[in-house]
Image 1: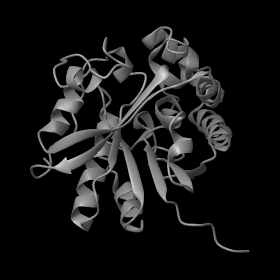
Image 2: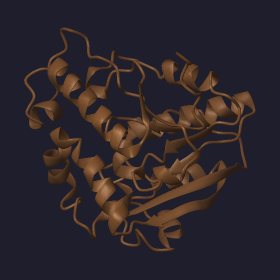
Image 3: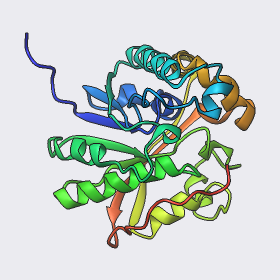
Length: 259
């Protein structure tokens, strides 16, 4: 049997649902094969107590939550025509103290130089911002082009200008939704590469992929309201390409209030 083809596009999804929420409409337009790489896809330690978030999703144990999420992600990837790749970093509540994203760095170093990498912006999500920082640093060290950056949803979608041509400029000013974008602008110039407003067919396909992640939808809705509405934040997707203007800062990602 021939080995699987090397990916032409790699989407870095911090958690199991982020690629579907943020990019399901755009993925068919990207060069394939496409790999969706869940950074925090690792198995929790056997003795790890179940996290508060996972109890809100209805799980009795960390292992049960991971098994369900992995299966949900496989179903979503199949619908999106992408290959599922899981890195061995446990999710935040299950990560050892002081854990770093060395596995992500090693994965990126193994990619061919012409692979298109998409990384999350990190709007009010420290896990997402940490993935962006590692991707920027490693690809710069390799002399490879910087990743494209995607607006992570539903977080960025709370911006009043979301889904309009003014979204990028609004992020550059917003103290609620734009801190990660403003941080990115300290080291890179951004250019909108894709600004997609989903038509009905694209929306139906995206909704089906998002619904695969059913275990998390109720608590996400509790935090973000009607995010699955046809006119909600998932209706639009936004991706930027980057041009470096200054050395990337090495400070760790910091948390900020929920957007």
